[in-house]
Image (cartoon, rainbow, N blue to C red):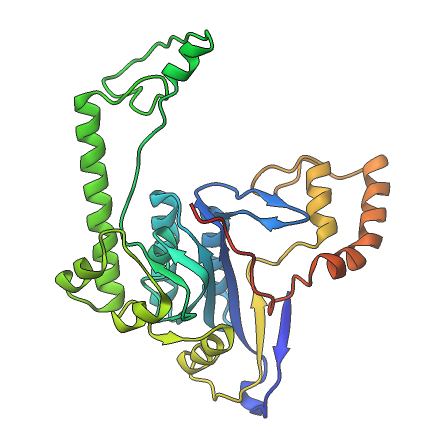
Length: 314
């Protein structure tokens, strides 16, 4: 999906493209869960990294606008996205982050390497820290008369089993993992924001800041919304402020009909189909295609200027 943003325009800049990538919801490694009615509830690292690769390989793309609205999620998935943001900049594609209601923990992790970060004054920002653990349900199961057993091979193979607590050795390994992840998070922030180790530690420890406070502490470059971020993207791309640009979503957003149809033919989580539709499914597709436009009107225009839905704060 793409759209031209009109201005006074410069003929030599006409057709310049700014890529728009949405990062909304809880960050997960694999395919994010999506609802045809409510949109995505998870940010798939696999999908976002592919979007970045497509964008920085496109010769027409002059800059990338990364819209983040996320409370965080998987450390591994966050690192995967962080790497692609860095690669985009190494390929000469400036990255401007625009934050929505929240960009905390992993949501800030993936924003840290951007050229510029824009937040709303009240955006929940930062939460530079890491948290992990597990729920142990053994006592609950015992109360309702359910017993469990397991077979394990390896000293820590059952480390995250919900049927027993951590052993002292497992707890030590978990603490070491958390310390390593936290140190890496702070190093990414220090490098991306050009801050000293002490300055990062002063705003870290899992604390959450408003966008306004985050700007004062060097975690954010500017306050504002989508329009401010777009202007910074033009500036980073070397385009005049009134240049006419095409804003293109990466990857292409699916219509409501396509999302429903994907469910009908049992697509896998990467969006790869299991085969060509036929018979009843063909007729269903025809009917859904006819309903797509009115459904999108009723459910909200999925166009590039629409703010993404707010992810659950967890």
